[in-house]
Image (cartoon, rainbow, N blue to C red; front, side, top):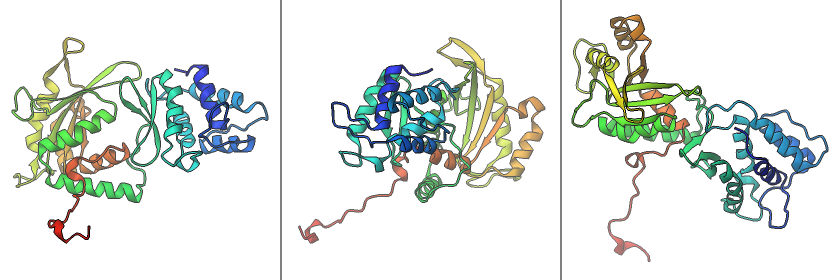
Amino acid sequence: MPFKRRTLSQIAEMICGNSGETECYFRYRSSSFLTEFFQDCETDFRHDGSTRSAWVADKLQTILAEPWPAANTPPESFLLVIKMLMDKGDATNEDQERRCALATLNAALVREGFEAFYAADGQCYLRHVATNQIAQSSPNPHRPFSAAELEKRGMLSTYLDGASEDELIQEILLPLFRQLGFHRVSIAGHKDKALEYGKDIWMRYTLPTQHVLYFGLQVKKGKLDAAGQSKATNANIAEILNQALMMLGHEIFDPEIGRRVLVDHAFIVSGGEITKAARNWLGNMLDASQRRQIIFMDRDDILNLFVVTNLPLPAGALPEQIFPEDTDDLPF
């Protein structure tokens, strides 16, 4: 899904830092700095001495000709180009918020249905306007975390300690799966248990081939173990077995296509730990085809994915602001 040549030419002028008739809000880059820019974007392009803006536009076209990870997600190299272009440290003729530079970039991107924005981490990302989906490569939940990310992870873990099952679903899982690209993320009557049939949530995921997979989620707040008897905050994996079988065997109605479909995969989600014994026991109780349909997701998975997808913390996880009770003691 290449961009229009006009759009690429405008972005190329921004990368070069050409002023034109108006004030420029982008850093000027000569030949050697253009080569350095694209090396930082993990490409091997080297400026050949030709007209800078035309050369950059050609390279952007080459990048966008690469396979797109998803219909609304440009190649990783292009996302890096936008991130490098909008580095707050390169602010020119304005403050580090770079509002003018952002407005200039978005005036070009809107033609292609995208919008650039700064996230809480200070980095610039692209959002697909029609679907409101953030364009990013698949998040890696196993990468090393920064100090700020570890702090965010700790606050979320503390929040999960006191969160109810409904809060886990509403405040954590729904925004998380929507951010990961799932569609029709719907709660299956969890509060009143009406028409739940073993699943708390159902959703679907569209493959790049436009085929659709359906998923059901069974959510438990506490630890899942294989003990003989459930404890106060733990759930026995035997309680999950019947729910998993119901989830896999019961059809759901998708109103967008007007027919009933079976769940392709079942997520067993726990706000605590899912012990190895519990995983093995459930696997042994299911036949080979059913085992392949089960996906486990415990607290570590939730925390890591929530952090790397850059989702905002729920209101209950944010530190409370402390205000003086007696304002008469204030010096003003």
